[in-house]
Amino acid sequence: MYGEKTHSLLIGYVLWIFGFMGSHRFYYGRSISGTIYFFTLGLFFIGWIVDLFLIPGMDQDADLRYSHGIKDYNVTWILMTFLGIFGVHRFYLGKWITGLIWFFTGGLFLIGYLYDFWTLNEQVDEVNRHKFIQIV
Image (cartoon, rainbow, N blue to C red; front, side, top):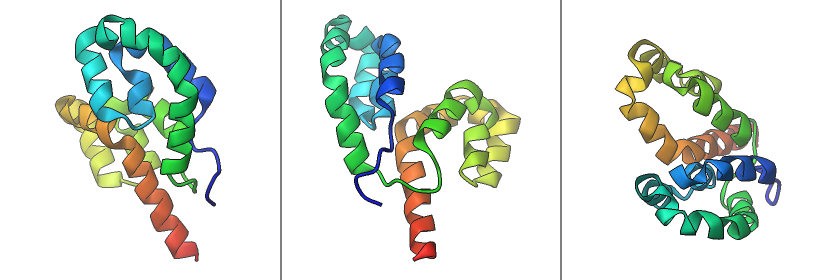
């Protein structure tokens, strides 16, 4: 189970295009720097350009840090990015109650949606570790 790819280098670079808003950093589990990029436009675009060369390392770190399992990180991030205010990513993770809350409140009035940007990798990791423990 260890050493398998959890994140996609291609998706990392696609998100880098919008990285001056921190999206690629959130994707790779770097929430603090993602937030800083969000508020400073990628550290005034300088950090954003530097990240072009740092993405392969961030990808490798994410693959080592997060558990491969039944739920795919890339699918979860795509669902959250495009349908997150409707809670679709939470339904995918089996979190039906919060999925319904997100659906009826627009991602808990967007605050829950922002919370998920900070914690989505950990949420997927927790589901994958829990499912792995049940199987073993």
